[in-house]
Image (cartoon, rainbow, N blue to C red; front, side):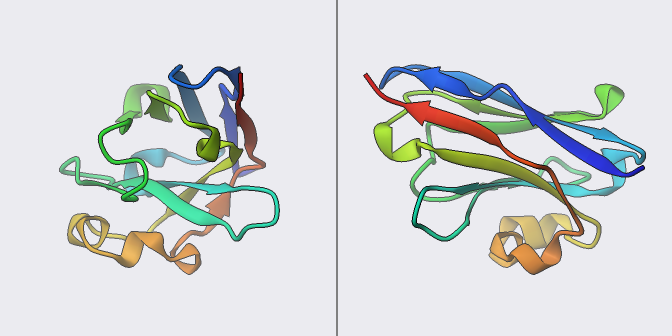
Length: 131
């Protein structure tokens, strides 16, 4: 069974950090670009970050640049999102997704932002930033 499972969410104070994990089962992440998206209450789902399957190409939404870092450990079949300097506006459900056809140049451009590029989605993990 093909599955993506997110973990690592929780409640954190402003300025704090969390590391989200996206683990795959039933398939190998090596061949997929992996994106992180988030959805806040009453808002549309939006792209946060993406990493290509090869060459380590990454991209970030402007709102998280300099604070979030995406990286992958193919040996563990897992992609991570390190989130630092968290703000209340980062509060959302965070989802990871796998895209088979996004090339490194696609990830470096704007294609990664479109949810239609992603075939598999996780169930999400809640991140709440509040004092």
